[in-house]
Length: 77
Length: 169
Image (cartoon, rainbow over all chains, first blue to last red; front, side, top):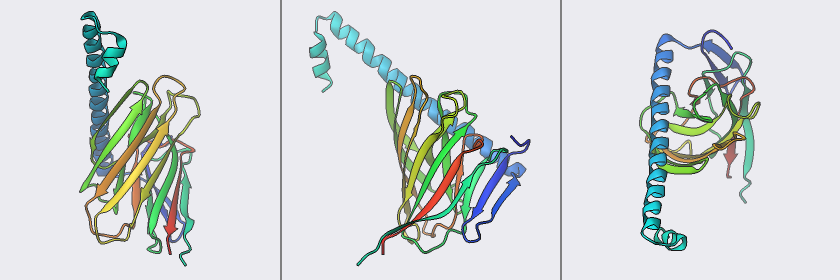
């Protein structure tokens, strides 16, 4: 890949494709946005993993109380 | 009688240098809706997909949206701003496999707020492929004249982007 990040612009009227180096401000802004997006994604996935773990733990406790698998499944329907 | 059309406006295939963003500018004001179809890949190495953001007319403000995603054995939903898709196959995922994404932007010339939707999938040949649907809003009254897609880091070579116009009359 190129050393410097490149932005591609396709002009829909002329068909001309322009490739240019990102400015320092654009590079900084992209880094901030990328980190924010990655953080959001990681948080969403961590939340989903916690929900799955809590669900499994809850089902295990219900099973320990004597509920059958069908009874446990029916509780979440 | 209406004669709907589906017309390719412009396209781009990323070259060997990669791209930090892809912009379609000077979008003609002759259609009713816009559609972007893309197939992309990035060097993202954490998980099997990464996030693209979308901006209109160079603006990154006044965006809001919700998503629902499924991956591997999990799924969740939530809110994101300026979110386009988990559209990028990860280089550490299946070799040479690119993701695919469709983005639909109805009434892009309207003086009302602009909505858009996106659906995307990335295959990993493993336990964590992704599929994501997004409903987004750009709270702005301007007609859309340019669209920029920005990946987490870089669109790799051979990522492709197609912009179509739909005319419903």
